[in-house]
Image (cartoon, rainbow, N blue to C red; front, side, top):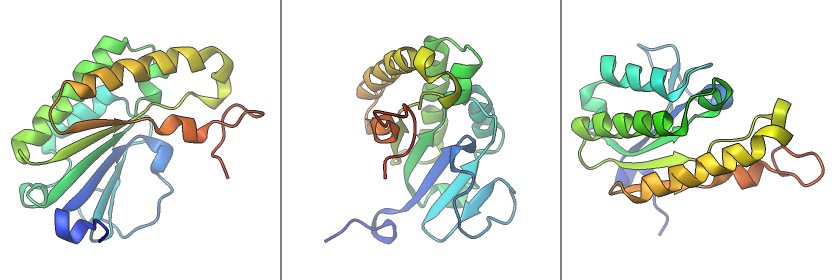
Length: 167
């Protein structure tokens, strides 16, 4: 039997601009958030993990009654951190802070940290650094209970073009 959000809770996806074009209904209070009944998508164009952590601290992204229904938190950001030259250690600390805040609102929430994607405009220079950062994030997630790292960035690589979603 497939796992569905209605059995295991809603999914909260927090992202930078990479997911901003996803289609779903609107979440009424926060313009950056879309809600379709099972998944809540919060996109913050230009945001790095420090800014996202600040949003978690200030208003928790969603209200407390919604947090009770969240079964999975997916963090899908980091490209802006890399572009801004944020140190890997600081990125890890901000991700830990986000997870701590999320678990203070719902101690049972599972967390998935998606791999950071290399930037298309400087792929040849950034690819190795981003792979190293993703390796560090994988180790970080392995140390936090009920947290997993998803190496999605290989799905976006194309041998001839360097960076593009695979068809």
